[in-house]
Length: 325
Image (cartoon, rainbow, N blue to C red):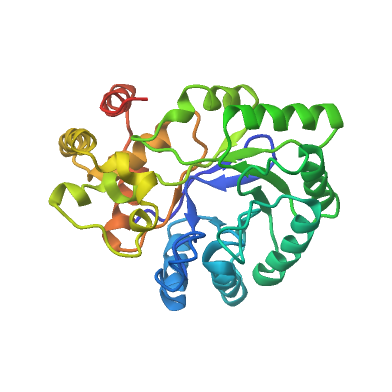
């Protein structure tokens, strides 16, 4: 077991984060899905996974007010209260629909103020606060002023944005600079070997502006772990089952053929396919720290492999070349 991880700067926030973040979206449900509440990890299982993450040196726990309708935040808050871990960093998100899945994204100042109060009550504190998705109905300056107020009141330390395009990010940075408001310090989008759209334009902007980047879905819902090369069926209630439309392109014959080539390369490096996929992310120059959610010892072993593998430039390029960017 790898007992510790490097701490890395999160953009220009002045906050250091561990090389991997633990994603708590699977505790009590599957992300924000209303139909999957109760299908994720139980409370006890979630607390055990948080313990395992801490033992491996992970210091950032990522959740959201909408995950399992709040049960994820409650579980993380219980773990923090019982374990009192020194140096833990708490990240959560606001804006995604909570009461009814059909409700719109809400980044109004009133909603941010109300939900931050709820999240602090559940978690004990919030260090890093993210907008969960863009809200086209609320002026950016209004949303960003609410985050600025929370920072000024020391209710949060920094804010970031999730599920944004390069145009979204450009607009946020422009408004921040013109209005004298705090910038978003990092971006949290889906990104992995098989999902690399952000490399075209968003990541160059992230790098140029000195922002952090903490991608979710590092293994494409398990596709990059060889699971589906072995003919496994999609598990009911799993992330892929809940978001089949999003993951459909990862499960085509052509996509799985590329995963097989990745598996062949992993064998040459004496690591698992998942370990190589995580090592590739860790080696990526624009990635600060991927968000992971291991549930089994084999999945944790892949994390250990990624930390131990000194992936050279040639291997990094070879793995990347297997998938279109």
